[in-house]
Every structure is written in structure tokens, then in C-alpha cells.
Length: 323
Length: 257
Image (tube, rainbow over all chains, first blue to last red; front, side, top):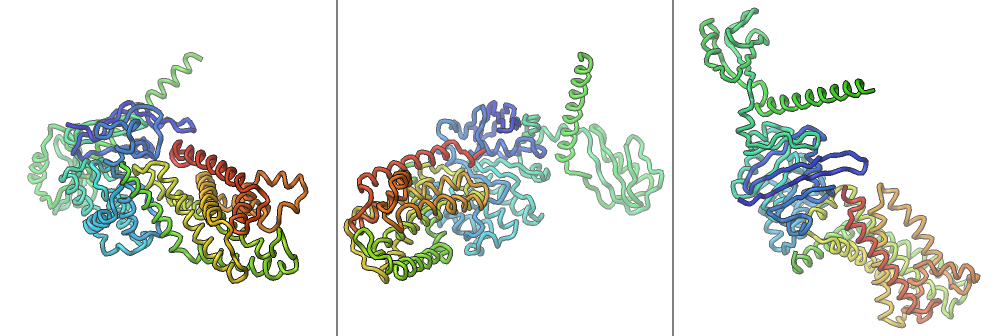
């Protein structure tokens, strides 16, 4: 299968000496729905900025559908659509003009550009706003406008940098449905997001970047398998005893009708239900305390930072020993 | 991109530029019309009648070509500097930078946008001048070609200014402290013959001298500078400005990180 995006040994050192990318390798297969996650300042936006040419790379190679961007960036760009993190359209332009003008930049004749603008503005629920200046749109509408603009030349690879930031949950879910449809119709999607539920819901494969290095690159399923423990929140009908205990489980009483229970790998939640039932306590609802991917991500980042601290203290110790 | 796609991209940029300055016509087309009318009234009709002739023409006839070129120069420059810096400021320039449009098409699109505004304002000012003075064109070829070349040159200069500008002050400093003095000292209001030899020599490094005199030759048939030399110098300055603009775009200086 062709790789939609192939990155090898990509590095970036900014003028101030900051090394944002330290020779990363990444491959995204055609048709994939791929998540690129990482904490703030990890190198996600730098990676994306290099792919769509707003940042000059310091080293390494980037191929888009097997085309080397150093050799034919213009042709490679025809296959990419980008939805940046920040709003980057002319606020005084009308919605229709923004989308149809972008189509013109990709060489689409005026008639086709207008048809495509209508198609995507309609699909994203913005057709009624076509004659409105972009500055008058709500935050969610502005995000959708940027998606319509990115799709107007019908790219094979769509890259979305925090597409649902600041968007309400209802709008976010409708955008997820739209992105799923686009992906199912064959468009490869790469997504960066801080909403880890979003990545878990949408993406099949995932890479985690931290301090300019890829620290995980695997399928979402395999990553979630690494989760060794989950915390569930249980709501009960009956009052919970002050000295609540369940044999074999870590439990925390939150209030009279709410408790948290930790289920380690190999344990069964049925045993919790049985013990509570035996104690005459009925459960009315159950949920994960946090999104599973979020829990894993936080654990992973915590591990990395403790490793970094250990290395630092080791390095400091070595330095002390030699001085 | 094939040649047709490049043409579509180019015409898209030009149309966008034209749409922009027509949308804000009260800021782009009206002020030069009013300013130049005041110049015609004050320098031409009121003061000019006391000055007498210059270069064998009435003072009004003498200053009209210079004032038309002043409008062309300032508007070609202002269009590109404000449009490109505005796009940079609002980050909408990224729409173009991420697209496959070649850099020379981006540059040409903005420059031709500036040229159309310069020429449109030039036409408005020319029509206004007819209320104050007769306008007999000595050489249509020289007149038209010098307007086009001049507006290209100053549109390129506006582009360079926009790339380097970090804030709105930066796009007004050059027009105020460089462009306006060059125009005023470029022979719009006086003949080079009136200057002492030293200052007449210094004036030769001012591109406005060639612009104003070549245009005056096109209209009146008189010039302080050989018109062929004027064409050569304008072409020389244009090549330098184009080469430097392309260097800025190709290296991504101040546009890409």
C-alpha cells in the first residue's frame, strides 16, 4: 500500500537554537485515520508546518504519496489539504469568496471552484452564511469554514491541527461524523488534538510525540491494550458505608452514593458487582473516570518525565562526582 | 501545476486584489482624487499662474504629468504593501503559501493587482486634470509604457516593504520618509535645470527623476533626462526589485520559519 505520508529522520532547529524535532520517523498509510498526539511544545505543529511548507526543515526527508517534497513540492501540495490551528483567513472576505478563491489557488476553473465551494459549504452547514463576512461567524463556524476551504480541491490527505478546539460538544460530534464520512470515502486524515476522546473515537493508528521524538507509533487498539488499570465511577442507590472495602480491589468512597474502584489487568468488574450486591448495594450507573486514552497518555507522559528526571539527576550526580 | 492552472491561480490573485481595493474604494480611490484636485487648484491654478512658464509650458501643464505619476506611484506601492502586509498580519497569506502556486505567480499576482490600482487612479487623476489643463499626448507609447513600468517598479517596492514590515507603523514609515521625499525631489514641481549642478547630480540616483521626466516626455515632449536613459534606469531598478522580491519568497524570509 502507498504511504500517504512518509517522514524519515526529520529534524528542525529554529534560529534561536531550539531543537524542535530530533530526527523523527513516521509513516501514515493511505486511507488511514491517524492521530498525532503530544503535549504542548512537543513538536506536532512543527511537523505539520514542515509538511505544508510554512516551516523549513533542517534535515530529513518527507514524502507525500511517494513524492519527495524537496523535488516536487508543488505537485505534492496538490494532494494535501490543511486545517490549521489558528484562524488564517481574511476576516473581511465573504465565506463563499474565501473557499472559491482557495480553489483558484489550486488551479480549479471558476465554474468548478464555485460548484465545489457550494458542495462543501452545504455539507458543512455554511451555505446560508455564504455572503456573510468571515469575521461575523461563530468560532465553530470558522472551524468548519477552514475545513471547507481545505477540502475544496479534494485532497487525498487532509491534515487537521486541533480542528475542534473551542467547539461545543454537539458541533464537535457532527464534525466527527463528517470527518468519518470523508475518511470512508477514501481521504487519509491526520489529526492532532488535545481531546483524547476525539482521537480514540476517530483514529485507527496513533503516534505520540514528546520533546521532538516519537515515543509511540502503533495502532489505537494496541495502545489501549497497554492500559493496565482502569478507574470506574459507580453510583449507588443505597448509602455507602463509611468504611467501604471490597476484597481484592482498591476502592475510594467519594460521597454517600458514589465510589471509585480500580480494576487492574486480570481483574473482573463482575466481582465488584457481586460483592456490592452481597452487601445489599444496588448500582444505578457506571462510567470510566477518565477517557481511556487520556489515562494512558497521562501515564505515558508521567513515565517519560520521571525517566527524564532520573536521567537529569543521574547526570547531575555524575557531574558532581567528576568535579 | 500546468500552465492553465497557473493562469487560473494568477487571475484568482489579481481578481482578489481588485475586489479588495474596489470594496474599500473610499479609502483607495477617493483620497487620491481629492488630494490631486487640491494640488491642481493650489499649485496649478492659484500659485502656478504667478510662476509663469517652465520648460516652455504653463506651470499647470508642467506639473500635471508629475502629479499623475505621483498618484500612480503612491497607489501602486500602497496597494501591495497594505494588501500583502494585511495578509501577513491576519495569516491569510498562509492560504497562498500552502498552495502549489509558484512564487513568481504569487509575486506577479500582487504586483499586477497594484498596477491595476495605480493605473485606475492614474486614469481618474488624468480625467480630473482635464478640468484644469489641456492634455495633448506627445507619444502614446512612451506615456503608456512608462506608466506600466513605473507601477510595476513601485508595486515591487511595496512588496519588499510588506515582507519586512512587522507592524502597521512599518508600512507607513517608508512611504512617509522615503517615497514622498523621493517624489517631491524627483522633479514633479520643478525642472532639473533650476538645481545647482551638485544637486542635479545627486538627483540622478532618484528613480522618480526618470519616472517623472519620461512621463513628461510622453505627454509634453520635453524631459530633463534622455528618455532612453530613463527607460533603461527604470528597467534596471525593476530588475533589482524583482530579483530581490523573488529571493525573499524563495528563501521564505519573514514568511516561513
